[in-house]
Image (cartoon, rainbow, N blue to C red; front, side, top):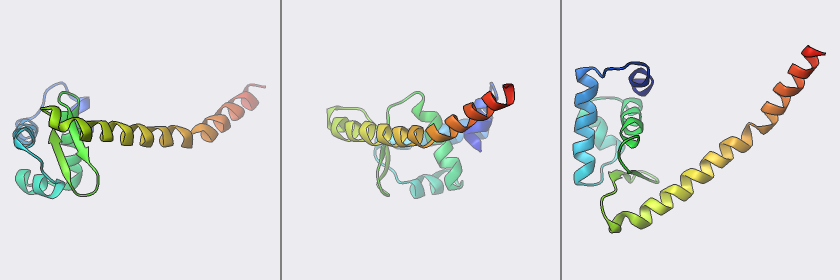
Length: 116
């Protein structure tokens, strides 16, 4: 995973820098789909997603549902899509957190039993 590799290392490789810069430059001028970005940097879908995740740490990247793609928010015209994305991502994060409650309960129960 490119993003995991990027996170673990202090310095980006030239290839990573080039891919990140290429995607950034494309998104700053307008919307692009995942397939367009795959072709642009000649990489697989996972690499594109990892690059987008990295860029999101520094720029307001709007992920549009379906196959509509991504863009960097720059003006008030992006406000509604940005609000929609926040609501969608928050809902998804809450679902993930709800899904681990029972697993956490299990871990606590097992740890208590092991300590007794």
